[in-house]
Image 1 (cartoon, helix red, strand yellow):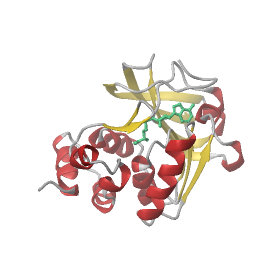
Image 2 (spheres, helix red, strand yellow):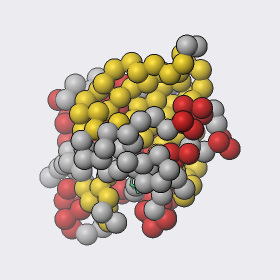
Image 3 (cartoon, helix red, strand yellow):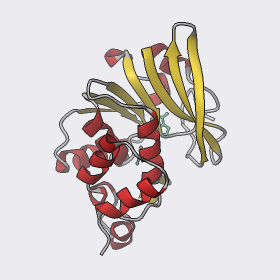
Image 4 (spheres, rainbow, N blue to C red):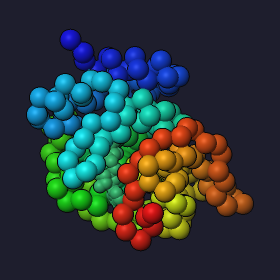
Length: 210
Ligand code: SAH
């Protein structure tokens, strides 16, 4: 039988070393964050994207883990997530950060995510429906920003809502083939630090989409 530790093994085999990220993965049961049908439940412990309805998928766990590791998250961090989906990445972020503000465009997915996070015992997430490309100025500035939908360039509001010294990771591209890029807010402005990997994301909808 597969279980959560298979996801940890997959992430480690792809080079993830952060103890905090590995502990977070162990403590979040991915089965709570996919559909209840037997196919989704079967895929939950495999390192693959799983469809979550409305033509969306929850991201590959090892890719999420690599992105979280690259962000070098501290327990004091205040994070913004764009694209909640069913909330799996939100739950991992919540284990790593002080607070997480997550914005999802699709109301149906957001409602399910809120239920999933509750079932997982997560209490430090604030979830909102809206266009995450605009960020969430009410709770800004953020020390960490993570995007789960493709955008052709960094949306200006995200740049404005990232604190000095803050880190941001976004899939940059046309939707379907992106570069996952890590940025840092420096005194001289936003700097692209490195490209983590190439990956495929759904396009960001709204003002800052593809
Ligand atoms: N973080 C999720 C990924 C879900 S897929 C996970 O790990 O499971 C990407 C999500 O981004 C989809 O749910 C989609 O509805 C959402 N999305 C797309 N454009 C958006 C936008 N402008 N604002 C907020 N969410 C958006």
